[in-house]
Amino acid sequence: MSTATLRLDDQLRERIARIASATDQTPHSFMVQALAEKVDEAEWKLAMQQEADRRHQALQAGEPGVEWHEMRTWVQQRLKEEQAKRRAPKARR
Image (cartoon, rainbow, N blue to C red; front, side, top):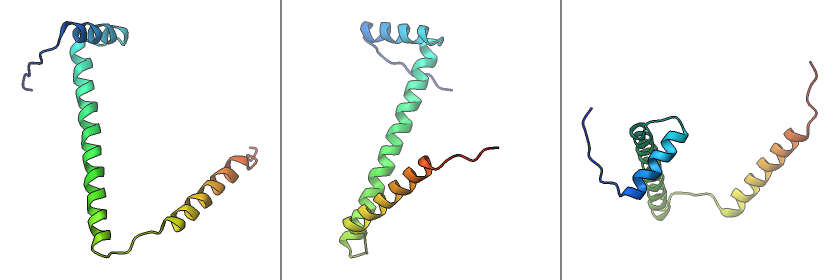
């Protein structure tokens, strides 16, 4: 593993130390976990943006899409099905 140096202002350093202590972690492990979570989030957002761009380009090129009223009907049907499942009596064992 390589070493990286982060310059943290005193207030942030104290906040990290306080939270790390409260969660039974070292400040180092807390920061590593926080960075990993932030990278995961950024990668997910980037992938979503790339997919949105790809789909937008496909629509602009004339590929078929889903009309809003069709999507709305589909979502409403799914919600009704989900609500019916929740209301259905549970089988006894």
